[in-house]
Length: 88
Picture (tube, helix red, strand yellow):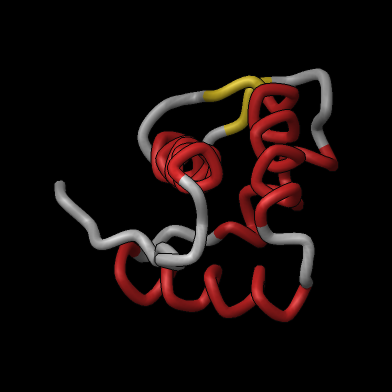
């Protein structure tokens, strides 16, 4: 399916790529099992672009409204199961 990811036009191309890769990985967790470490690593890259918790929550709400996939639930599950593959 095609979704509209919440992107800030002030981000550089590299920053946009980091955010889109993370959001695509969150989407993938809802389809297949993904190693938790891969999610956490991508989340760290995402946080370099979006360090503000309020901005992260805004992006998360917009992303979930558009796709039905939750950044919060994905990262929480990855943190709780660091050495496993996860799937929602």
